Amino acid sequence: FVELGIESTNEETLKHVNRGHTFEETREAMIRLDEAGLPIGGHLILGLPGETESMILSHAEEISKLPLSYLKLHQMQYVTGSELGEAYKNDPTRFKVFEVEEYLNLLINFLELLHPGIVIERLSSQAPGHLLLAPGWGLKNFEITRMVQKKMKHLQTWQGRLYEN
Image: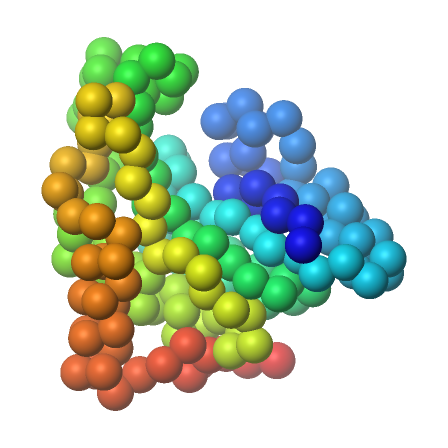
């Protein structure tokens, strides 16, 4: 497997967070890897600065077009020592930080739009507590996963329910 940090499908976001690559470059790399017969995994951050909910949900459509075997989703985290972390410390009002329930709803909406054949390996991430500035959920990754599963079961929904080929 080769894992690539997609992080966003929005070119302006990638430029804004100084990612160092474009989404188009990521797409081209994935096509070449797929042509070489290599299984591909990807990482996507939900909630990068400046991205609205509709922008985040549009990632599902773009991600669904990629030759991905699996996807790891992560909430945006602000950590000490990073450029974004320092900017967050200086003025947290400039940044959207999801509350747990907001993130769960966003994940479910995202998953409903995502191609059902892409395996989800992770729904959240957990920076070391001594570095994490936000969000301060205090939940382990498996707890987020259980919460999403429970809520999806309650809503009688599933990954790919709203996927359009």
